[in-house]
Amino acid sequence: IILSIVIGTVAGYVARKALQYAETAGWVDKESFLSSSITLTLLLVGICTILGTDDILCCFVAGNSFTWDDWFRIEVEDTGLQETLNGLLSMSFFMYFGTIIPWSSYTSANMLDPWRIVVTVILVMLLRRLPALMASYKLIPAVRTWQDALFAGWFGPIGVSAVFYSIETIKQLDEHEDSNGGRVAEIVYPIVCAIVFGSVLVHGVTIPLILMGKRVKTTISLSAINMRSQLSNPPPRYTFRGSFVNRDTQDDEKSSIHNDSPTEPEPPARRQTIVIE
Image (cartoon, rainbow, N blue to C red; front, side):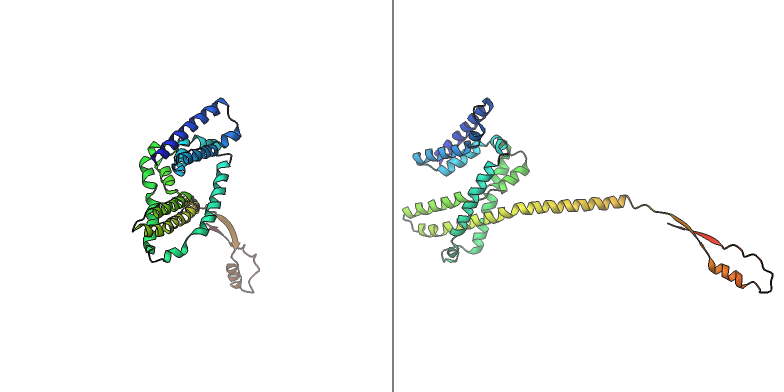
């Protein structure tokens, strides 16, 4: 393990510095620049296989060392190469993973209780990355604020490496005869699969929930702004001026005049003005 960490750290650092120098000097074209991470991965897998050390851990450490200052990610983020490879490999693995989940093993007599498995999944997702990243984010140039550390610490999907190491653990336990080895070998793979399944489920729905929350927050903010605007600026009051003829008063005056009285000119109709606000 220590040898894998040392090889990965040194290889990632040297590859990053060499690529930065070559990019500045104009010695590398775009195609070679984009494929440098894949080339580094294949090189480390070959070296670790020859030395008999852990190639997955070495590649993981090398990837962190290679993108330590976030320079490579910024350079390739507009190309879409990393997203394409990541999507292709991830979809292939998770489609395969769905076919190998040992559902029947969860009803075994040696299996843990269901609530224990659920608690294990929750604790692993909460404690695997989040505390360490929150405590050390100031040492990582790519993580600038505690909000970034919280986001990066939470989004640590568990996938192919966990399944691979569980299979390797079973092989190691089968090689050593132990009284508890058989039971551990029987439950380790189903528990790891449960953790991977929980990670896929929880991390898969987190982004849609965040986007939905932002949309709801924006809608509520706009509604509050409109309400405050209406309260501070009430609609204007319009004044309408008009007049009408009081016909009832005119008819009463006509009825009070005797028929034998001399004809007099009718008085003008009374006009009243009403102001409506």
